[in-house]
Image 1 (tube, helix red, strand yellow):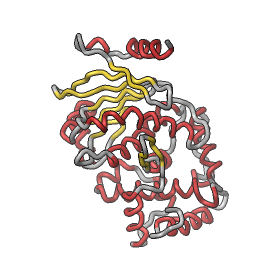
Image 2: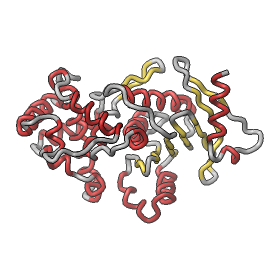
Image 3: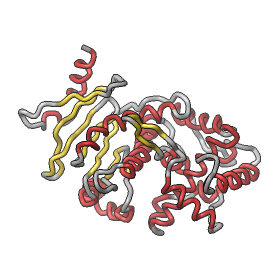
Length: 315
């Protein structure tokens, strides 16, 4: 009875349920291991027939055609929200349903960006292999080939964190931390239908960061924390990829160094963001982690070299 009531409430809450054509009945989906209730509805984008999945937390619209990917989307997104709310201690659920558009190809993605951003959309076309979150809405497209989904879902995990932080936190996270956690959320694998999150299992970030370190081109933490990804994109995708990879390394360091030495400070920042009291210290974000900022940076630089080296104990 509870599931039937939930599904009915979801239908009433959808602003455009009335647009569903007569005869197209919602399909109930549920995972075997949780109480997640999801309804499946028909959806179209510019005459391309797609699918819409709606749960308590997500409203996912997609024109993807691979059935095995479609079948796994509700489970993957449920795993994401569980990850976001538990990875750093208990964090709140979002206060609203989060919208996701996952398109079959880049052309549809560009059209949706144009629809939302107008002429400003062209700035983001340079991303090529990426996704964008705009006012809490993720706009993504299929980046893999031959029915695969790993790269696409990694971007979904990254952008999903941005959506979650915007919907669940009262205070905004600093950009460096928001992007760093987004990159840290990307690593995963799926085994026997179960999503397992493995932050270190992120070959793209690893190889990019390894190249930066081998070239002795790693940014100072002050520079990294003050960078704007939108401006970096104007300088080229390579610069932007280096930025994300270094933030992935920094957040990994904060979480893992000396069995989590700096993790309590990170948890405090996230809790303060959730409750609306987060403010940047007058002495900068680094002071949240250590009174000796030079020592913190030296520890980070020494650790990250070992972290990305082939055969590292962390891999």
